[in-house]
Length: 167
Image (cartoon, rainbow, N blue to C red; front, side):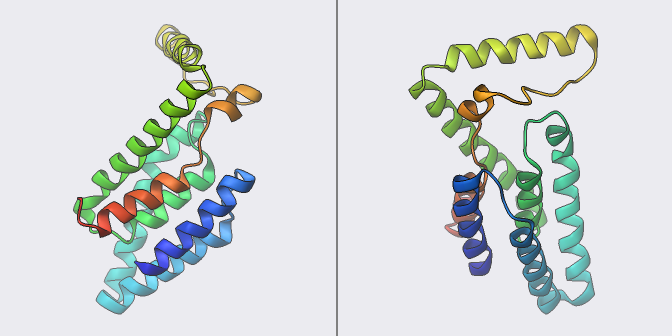
């Protein structure tokens, strides 16, 4: 788990600097996670890790597809989830996304765009309900950068909360 924390810290550095998480960091986390699981449980541990990571990425794929999450965020959440016991995965995801939502709300409040973003979300959801079709959620422009957050920080905080016994 210490290696995961180091990798997540490196991912934060890249994510906050470049708005991108390098694939080699995610692959390193996955490789070390599978090795750790193999050390504990052999081939079953590797399959367990891969299954958990794939499950999390599959659950988050629709959010990536509409532009709500970046590809690096989805892969990082999957790689990190493989380190946790199966019964903790939903709590890990909830904590990570809750922390991200709180950071986003504070960021929008500080930039005085909270009302604007809520109106955009309402119009987006209304359009989805009326048409029955999902579309990309604000794919480009300065508003996306001002409203978006880097998810690597909340993932690191959530893992630290797990290690600290909070959940």
